[in-house]
Image 1 (cartoon, rainbow, N blue to C red):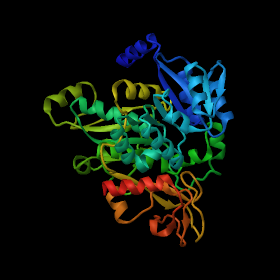
Image 2: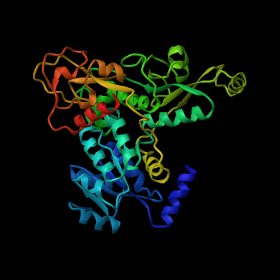
Image 3: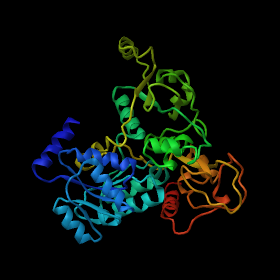
Image 4: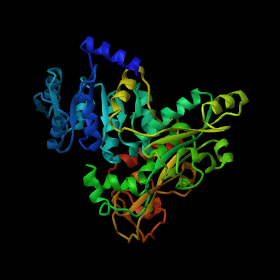
Length: 427
């Protein structure tokens, strides 16, 4: 962070800050806006795009912005306002994606279809892109990363969310001389049958949308997050849905997973109920006797397996660091390293009747389970990220995986088209 701070201070002194365009004005977006409002040297929140302009305005004002907020509808208006150092809002994200006055696009909607449109437009216009949207990355991240590489820009998830916190820890463990063999999440609750109705009260208390909170509770979110970690590390799942053993503390994880599976290519997984919760952990391996002596002195255990954990994640409060990493060092916090390794498949949350329309992530009709990509494709399972708007072609039983053969896909979906492009490239 010291190097980042120094470089940002140089930009501040030159009056040449990184100009950020933010898409979305929900919980995650407002947290990011709050951080920039406090005055991050060398960085400016230039524009917020949101379908509901009142929410975009609130994202500025709640964060403490006191400048005049300009509402724009044309590229010319955007250019004038940004260069005049006004805070800007618009309902058209294309404006900031194509503007020469925006350096980075931060996508914070959590929506796959809408996010796909925004990110492809940003990459086409050679903007660095930062995702507060693991759902999009899990669905078509490998393709978007390939497109970003071709455009010479950075594609990354954000620091502060569990996947990137986990990836930063993974790198640290490897730097210490341990071979990472398991990348793990810590989950406090999992109930596949939660719905926006059961989660409504909790969502209101936490200032988030019921569908988003439902995706946390029903397991879809952790499946999406760990799929992105699998795609970034090459690790796979030991079984569909992961093992997810109960644990009291992350240190217990060493004896809860197969050592053979960990050493044979690595695993992504999670533990349930462990304290401190809201964090992540990595199991590393080192069988060097001298290394083990040092680790024992520092109360890290007898080895050769060691647990390293981070007890918190501060999404989206750490996102400004990702913006700086992308622009200053062309460095991604987390991104796919090649083709898909894992997929998140759709499973019926209840009995679904012929003709019913699936309502996507965090809805009433289905939940997501992580599976290895090869298995998911052999079975033609429907990715959870593509479920919104699909129409059932037959009756589907509760807890039955849903395949492409079972549904009629929505027309004109850019996410579906991009997923098909990704499959052709990487399969």
